[in-house]
Image (cartoon, rainbow, N blue to C red; front, side):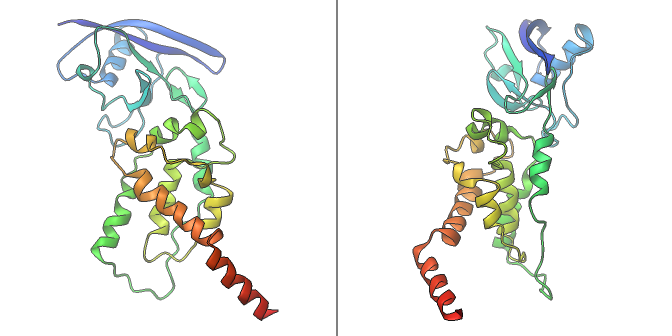
Amino acid sequence: MSDVTMRVFRGDRDGGGPVDYRVALTPGMVVLDALHAIQAHQAPDLAVRWNCKAAKCGSCSAEVNGRPRLACKTRMDALPLDKPITVYPLKAFPVIKDLVTDVSWNYKVNAKIPAFTPRPDVKWKMEQRDVDRVQEFRKCIECFLCQDVCHVLRDHGKKEQFGGPRFFVRVASLEMHPLDSVSRTKLLKEELGIGLCNITKCCTEVCPEEIHITDNAIIPLKERVVDEFYDPLTMLVRKIRGAKRD
């Protein structure tokens, strides 16, 4: 059995820095196991969120060796063990303590999105392909890794102008539902700032549920916004209809 150095951020809103801990490796160990070992034997006051330890609750999000990951899904033997393994809190959100960040902003964004609103007197029958299309988006566990890696939030801090990939996924699950009756394109354009996304696919790369965020959610939503607000033919038709009403 060998040891590995875990370089873990310790601190709070006022600042902090990395602290090194030596942890004994065991077969099948994941990063969350190493953090629990530190809590059990060296730093009982180490703050880290976790719940299911099955990569389904999204609680244990952190930046391991600089990459946003789920600590419970990141195997130690998949990391280079000849140098310290760094574990830092999500950069895009304010630190509360150690590896715990304040992600409450996400729930404020979520509250802006109109809920599922079925058409009145609709027959609740759907084709399987329609079910499959929206079901992919329902796999989201709200780990907020996609929010953390998005440069608009991570590097530019545009939380007032941008909703982020997690909520483009949520809007897509509603907009593409064949029984929903509400249009959210104006919200996407004016409040969620989908135009700021330059589709680098970094959000797709870190998604633990392997949701095709960019290709299946963001790009189709961008197309809807363009069709609604920038398509010249649509604008001409609206102009003609407006003239006729006048």
